[in-house]
Picture 1 (spheres, rainbow, N blue to C red):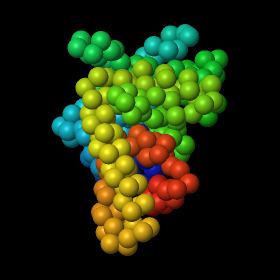
Picture 2: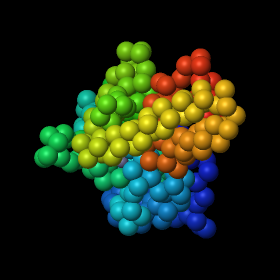
Picture 3: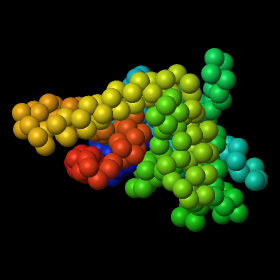
Length: 270
Ligand SMILES: [Zn+2]
């Protein structure tokens, strides 16, 4: 996961007017689903904001997929203490849109790996008593789920270098809880995804080891500088925002920092 600035989303001509018409129809009793073409119009624009990757797991998403997720569900909310018919008043509000793959967005069971997950109608809160049920401000709600559109949330997620499974990156109890619930709800522990994440981790860690050796060698022999720069460029590419699992790769790179290798911090700040 990485931070995505939704303010950069470019809307098609006349979209706000079409959204207002749809929102008025829904508030008058029309079905939200009947107006799905309105948010689907934004699919390509949302995809472009994050290099066609899922905003939750960073896997590439085919654009033909039904990929626009309503962060606050537009239909029923299974985590709500009372019957909740959905945040229908946010169904056409771009600030509620996320771009997600089927694994993160739909409830699925992975028979081989034995995991179940997928967001579907889930939207747990830190404090359920703050739940908003009818049109109005949602500012008082504190979502449990990590949100790629909140500046610091992505930093709360890491992965284990030994097998690519996701893990909390914080040591603070409530933040650990948010990461754990998000891993479960977004199905980030889906085994095939963990295998892919692990492959990227293995490549990255091997490059870091090579870079450390080249960096030390270059202190005595400047000719080794070329070898160091070459592998450093590969590491930089692996943690760049367009790379697969770049958030988790940054987490792993952060874990390799030490005082003998200031270049790691420099790469993280690049
Ligand atoms: Zn995903």
